[in-house]
Length: 98
Image (cartoon, rainbow, N blue to C red; front, top):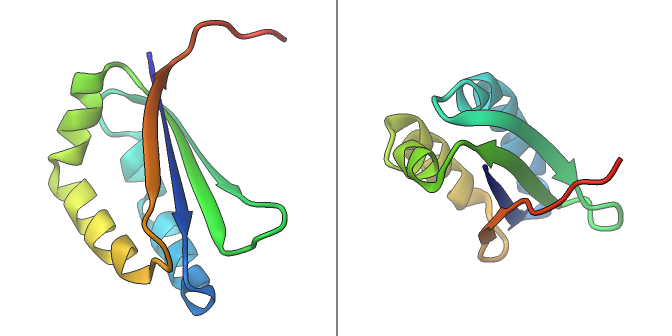
């Protein structure tokens, strides 16, 4: 399993547009082949900073999503709203404690 985190800082006036776009596309992203989990987080102190947290079957599955029309459509809109360059990284889960 691959864990993907993307940190995005939006212009304050663009937050509502981002949230509306995420709401409209979240089920399609979550149901994309290879995606088993999707969360949206908001920074506690900076209300214009959001993170997506997703689980992917493999790096290949993530790359198939990134090459898809769905991603291209969502990302082309989202990137127009940024105040700063996004930061993204992928990791493998080693351990989980409950």
